Picture 1 (cartoon, rainbow, N blue to C red):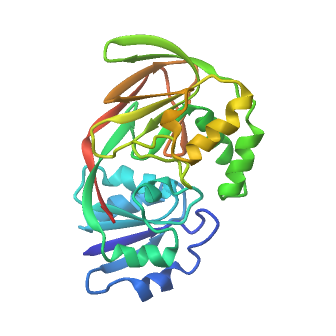
Picture 2 (picture 1 turned 135 degrees about the vertical axis):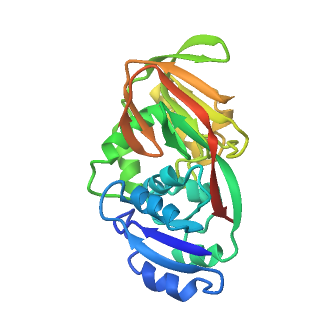
Length: 287
């Protein structure tokens, strides 16, 4: 299999520092004819993935976090080049959803026995995403996290705790000829189940069912926050009384809040915001 490893050298906390030697030592050379590229700037992984398609690579392996995975996926959606992941980021939600091993060495060995599958891709105002995106509190945190110097899960948790005074906002939503208003801390658009580190915001999300799990986190008092967090970490978000989950092909949101995140990448978009399943599939190579 003609394979391109695309490595983000600054993802997460630097677990990939010896990745070249690890790949050469552990990959099955009878199955993979491979080479490696390192990203040098934002969106470089997208450019490298586009080039891989033109050069007839059968597989792109993203080595980094969800941001690197998302950059590669943007180019690969709808193509015949598959995507796989060796997780090296702060959250690794996409990789962990598919039960890719957390240790780099184990993930490389696991790659030798992966299989081809197809999953849904989604879009927000025509911008693609494949993992978990949203508006509200999680987009607010993603915006702040993007400018922090310290990476890693602990840094993310500290930032989240610091921002717990975030106020719920009003959103007007429309789906299936239903129009309603809701006051929410966040509306999450989930193709996979988790943000990362087993924080499962949409525990029952299925990546090939043709539906997005829209998780509406309703306004609730601060004293309930620890219970909500525990439910997310235990994979019980769908059972929390302050959460509503709608499984839909499409949702429209009217709001004065222009900040969203797409797989953790912050963007400004204009209202109304249209979130929907794409008719283009993403070919993946996973356990």
